[in-house]
Image 1 (cartoon, rainbow, N blue to C red):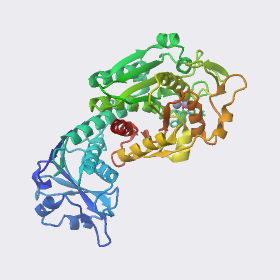
Image 2 (tube, rainbow, N blue to C red; image 1 turned 120 degrees about the vertical axis):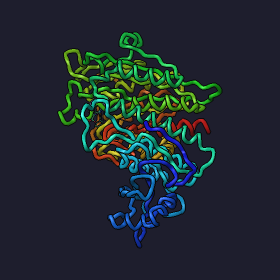
Image 3 (spheres, rainbow, N blue to C red; image 1 turned 90 degrees about the vertical axis):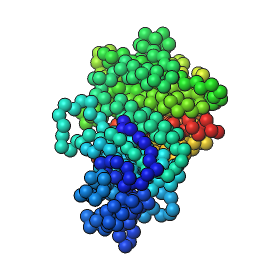
Length: 496
Ligand code: BES
Ligand code: MN
Ligand code: ZN
């Protein structure tokens, strides 16, 4: 993570290698956004003209880099498109993405100044987050450098006239480091992140944030009759875990329970995936990572809500000890599931965790999971689906996501799909109708949510892992999706 500082000086006055400015699109040609004035004067008032000569238009997503040739302290200017803005204030997410894209384009430089139009605390927060999130790079396993892979910016200074904004910087730092931790965990090769190592990472994150942590190993899971987690983990050499994190700030009156899917590798088990289908399955613990990191960030920021996180972890592997299609598992709490497809494993470990989390009667319960390929079919790779048993609470989650700059969309749990998981031999099966597969998975999970617990299920199969090119503040690979929403939701509940 780069360092982040604010400066009330102007863009030309801050010592840096690169200055990032905004460019607005208009019919008559692009114009500079507020914040770029001093730099433009240093360049003889001809910056917009120079950018236009290079083909810059100011459209959203566009990045244009120009040298200053000694006319300014910084060696280069990065102009990022902000579109036609459409009013006096900017959509914070446009600014967040612009800051991220600008910082990515500045890679290879040490210090960057961000001189975007930050009017108000929401805009400042977005720019700070975008800059920090855009400076991410996963290099742990690299031994040679590539021309195409420049080291990320190390120091970010955001120009802002906002006074008493220390808390904005602190929040951006906490949120961005939680997102970076999530990305790191997701990007780690699965042979270096079995359930035991993921559990250890949770304990480390918890200890730095003053959260209490308890790890249940396979022996404890057998004692506790966690049949779903044990069943999914049965085929692997590396045994499963269940991690419980607790953040209990004094005076908190609301309890938010979190559950995250932690499949450290999903081969499909005996219902084996194809080779292509397995390529990105190290990311099948992205929900677990997001829940762990968000819990740490919520504690770090001292948000006034109690958090009880239950994170089941297992490796889904085929072997002589693996569960078979048609096996029946006795889940935590006693319900019986006929496993028809061992690749529908996430719902099995989540069923146990949801039942356990419900036992303490939390006010709210949110699970985050890379649960179904059907999520990608329904909503694409950038929008998560949100289901639940309470329309108002589902709305709160979707609304928190919107303000945090993450795309989530409400989805139904149609009762008529429920009969597709009726079983001939047990209480229900783990797979049903293929059409609406995301919703069927949600209906399965609902069976394990306790009476009276307001619950939302977030399917992040697509948004958690970027298989395309980097964009905005989003790198390739692990994205850290859902962390910002969970922190925002905790803040919203604490304020309510
Ligand atoms: N981890 C996968 C879902 C997934 C697929 C996440 C692609 C990210 C990208 C999950 O465990 C799975 O395999 N789901 C099956 C369920 C099916 C067997 C009912 C699926 O979606 O195909
Ligand atoms: Mn699977
Ligand atoms: Zn899975």
